[in-house]
Length: 69
Image (cartoon, rainbow, N blue to C red):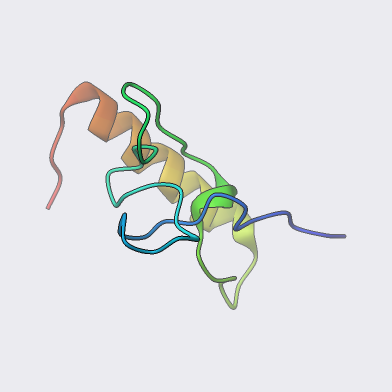
């Protein structure tokens, strides 16, 4: 099957193809974060499932204000 990803790539505001910053915040829109496979700027060499779970977990931590080293 296909794994849809990268439509909302993560990157700096200076990158015209980037939609979200490293904190998953959408450039130019206050209060909106994206935490799914669409933020991956490149396809991982493994299945996207675990990567997507890690992004979601990090997104939840960012929203709750938790910092994990």
